[in-house]
Image (cartoon, rainbow, N blue to C red):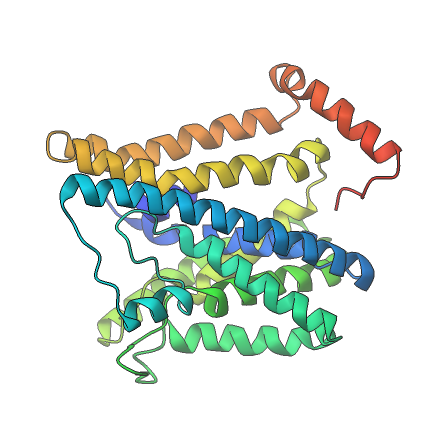
Length: 332
């Protein structure tokens, strides 16, 4: 969540490197989601996919209504209007581009819903066995339609590139999480230093890609780099290789807590800019990052095995233990 904040709002350091390198954060959420949902057993996988689709749909509707209300209030107070046209509808429905001033991060929730609907339908049709081929195709599409769009001179109906959406971000990284799940015995047994070397190499590749593309006048989209994928892959493999000290908390509470933070992060930041930006520009601009950092610390403390978190979770974990003892679904 901290690096999602840096990526969205910027980092208060002079070089800008932290902000540039923070693009690995969002793919991590897709990878981890795919790892826990796309299990090997088809019956369990279908059950998890169905539940994920339902929950994602409910979340999408809730956030859509919430953001619509917030923007309606802002439009009313600012005497603004929203011009609705075919282009805007296509951008929102197909490309997951949010049309209003507040709520840019809605694309993530929308893209995840689309991706899981596609995977669920494919699995129902017994086509999930082809996921590795789809993974390769979507990764290639992600690169050619985004960071290398100027290299191949991509232009379709006036779109010079395709931003992060269900096709170019959610689907490939969720499937990558499924691949890590399938190969976990091999991938998660590497020495820890290998993951960190990969992470550093990925970061170096991001800087190299940006430099080469910019120098050749081919940099038109910075939303994703190959290096981000390597960084996300390395970090997720490292995290999954570490034994869970508090698995109940991580699996059952972390998605809810971080999801809540994610939903309200952009609206709070935008409102700070609107109401405090003119008088306190630096405070308003960097408050999003500071808030993300503080919230990340709180989440870490709550999920860690500390005396404070034990008091916070004891009743909930007792209920979970009883649930699993009665034959409830396993943690994964």
